[in-house]
Length: 382
Image (tube, rainbow, N blue to C red; front, side, top):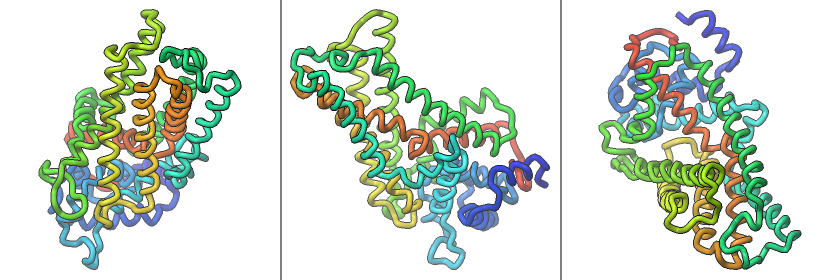
């Protein structure tokens, strides 16, 4: 039976279940009776530890789902069967609801519905025009005497303060959101071993391996590992770019080594390799997204997905162009373009597709804790 705390949490956080939540509860009951897909991924393994699914369970399991599509093509009850079981689509709709429910501040949760390509690009364009305007006022727009030094155009401390403040604010927003999510879906104690298991699952994208680690189903029922590979390129490309910025910060503040850095320096090498990964990965994901089976996922979220991919591509392409042309008269314009895309990305992080990685990581941690604790079948578990 549900505990009093669970019932209170349901009422407080979710009120009446939405149509998307009810649909997940319906299809999971069917799946739990069938059990054909129970070895496919962590979502189905988690399902077997439950006899019914309260609202917290649904939010947890929706974020645990990696939308590999294997269960849809394996299911005998999938459309056009009258039961209409479509786990990937049902889970995708609930995931969006969780982002909105746990957004912080809550009033900004509606941005998930609007965070498409147009909003992403318009936000970045506005920042780009602002930065170009600043350069025009100081006559540095086409300054060719900077020797590749970005800080001759925008002072280092000003950039560090502005971008650092925005980045920290957005990280706080995401941290507050995922904390609310965690408190709603889990009462289990944190475990070091489970954290290691979850980290392994995050870094290897194990659950994008599909039912038998053959990969995802994309346009049809054929298995492919390309989505997993493109996710890896995107994820590790992003981490390498972040590492490049972090190393450059250490060089500047702790070692007194001032930019610009040579093409063979560690920050430049990390940023170059990361930038290449952030071109190959997002292009591949964009192609797969546009060509996926129509029953996979939630078509209404495609604008958000494409906006996120376009933002990553804009950052990486403009960054590499800036690196290649930093000693030319185009450097000022390219710097404004690149910084505008970076700032636009920062502002959208807590209210767009980036959040899926944060919530999914929390769901993987909860799943790892349940596995470590050897949780048995329960009714209405939280």
